[in-house]
Amino acid sequence: MFLRVVLAEMKKNIKQYFFTSRVLFWTLALPLGNGLYFYFLYLPFEKGSVNLEFNASIFTLDLTGFTLIGQLLYSFFTMMLLAGVAFFSERWQGTLETVLLSPANRIALLLGMALANALNYMWLLMGVMFSWMIFLNVPVFIGDFLAFFASVLLSYLSIVALGMCFEALCIHSRRGHMYANMLQEPIMFFSGLIFPLQSMPRALLPISYLLPLTFGLISVRLTVLGGASIFDVAVPLGILASMAIVFFALAIWLIGYAERSAKAEATLTQF
Amino acid sequence: MIITGNGKFAVEVRELSRDYVSTRRNHLLGRKKTTIIRALDKVSFEIHEGELFGLLGPNGAGKTTTIKILCTLLEPTEGQVYVKGYDVVKDANHVRKIVNMVAGGERMLYLRLTGRENLEYFADLYNVSRREVSTRVNNLLELVGLSDRADDEVEKYSKGMKQRLQICRGLINDPEVVFLDEPTLGLDVNIAKDIRKFIREKIIKEQGKTVLLTTHYMFEAEEMCDRVGFLNKGKLVAVGPSDELKRRIPSGFSMEVLVTRSTDEVLEGLKHLEDVKKLITTDYEGQIDDEKINRLIINVDSDKAVPEVLNYMSTKHCRVVSVNLRGPTLEDLFMFYTGET
Image 1 (tube, rainbow over the protein chains, first blue to last red):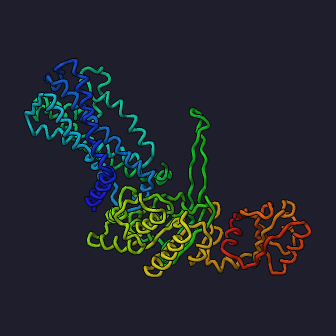
Image 2 (image 1 turned 90 degrees about the horizontal axis):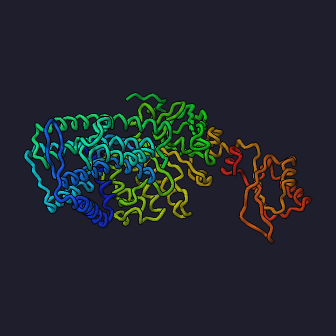
Image 3 (image 1 turned 180 degrees about the horizontal axis):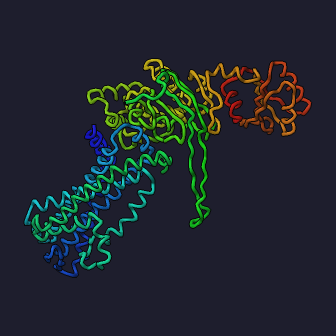
């Protein structure tokens, strides 16, 4: 039953997203444009590099690769953050009530929606970004494939779990969507998307360490560009795994709370 | 699973109240002002197995609030509600398996999916047996005459087709109790008639389901419902079979008079005639010789009142366009209990 609801929710969302072939075109065109943007942004610096201090070591990473990976993960993160928009659109379609009228498992609904959002263009985004890295001669140096896969997978899971929390908030209130929008810029700043975290004032670092994107960026950059081993990135991977569990548990609690309070406060029909 | 209700009824509502809290500020930084609006006030009624029960009342009477509580989409502030003996708050998940709801209007469907995809999606949410999904979806589509458009996107459907698909969605889990919230709202006469026939003949007679219907259309309730309840400002003011309720109206007849030049003064005098029990004025879209026509519904004790009323109007220089004397209808009941037109 659980898996059936997850799959039904994914199928519905993917079908609605790719309702016309033009969506496929734009899904391809947008990351292509992003890559072009970064290429010209860093062209004046020629082949610059950035030093990333981590775990008492200094990794020297290619600047274009550093920002391309930043952009890749940030796009994914933003997309998951805005996954609540899917519930938001259910509000104005009037389907939120019909979905919650059913006995379907609420976590399965959230998970299906989050996975559909992740799948909708993540595979294309990754393909295009990696193509750009090859085209721009970014020196990819994957020393440990296990570390690389673990970094991508755990980044993915922790961000999906956080996206589920925002979806749950959107069941409770239409304002969930607004909060997700407001968080985009601060997250871009605090996660170390464009600059390494060591450039940031120390007092602000605790905020960065609350974001799964921060650790996702560290581990993916180090494993893709710096040849880091699983031991080098054990700490960020451990944190990412913990965050995935915590956010998933939080999403389970939030969905129950959100539905109960929406029924008590009569906010399900607001749009 | 504990059955806590009486169990004799399909639906039991006991002393149900629901408050809505509204907060607003006079300006952006102003102090919050909270207002509590009582949408339902100690409402009690029950619906028998296989019965079609109509819940009637003007806008804002609390009909939709009642339906939403019954199908677990809203929590009651006070009172108990049982569907098939299961508490809608404590045992909400079980209630959801045995009920479904259809609302009027064009929402509540996925417009970019086809009709069939919509139904298959909801069949998955209700865990309808995989072997049965295809047969059930096809049967439902056939039942409402949508088989030939099943694979078109819903956004290409007409209003009537969307409403018929909504009814399919509401029956996809083969519910024991169906809540219909103004199912014919905004539909043209023929489609509304088809839907009423479908509800009466297929859902009630053939499938034996219990139905709670809310509607604004009194003739619809009169044509379809076994019993009706009148909600007014959150209170249930009358409940019973419509024939029985009609007998409760103190005056046995209604005169429908179309008249011009009926000033406030004339109407006030009319109210004081001996045989006139109640007078309601309604708007009528019509003119005669550039004079606006008013429609008066006058509750009278007997046909003896007719000459009295007509004589009075004649002395007041009113122009009577038509007079119709009839026994009370559900519309008269509605006006009697709610004071609205």
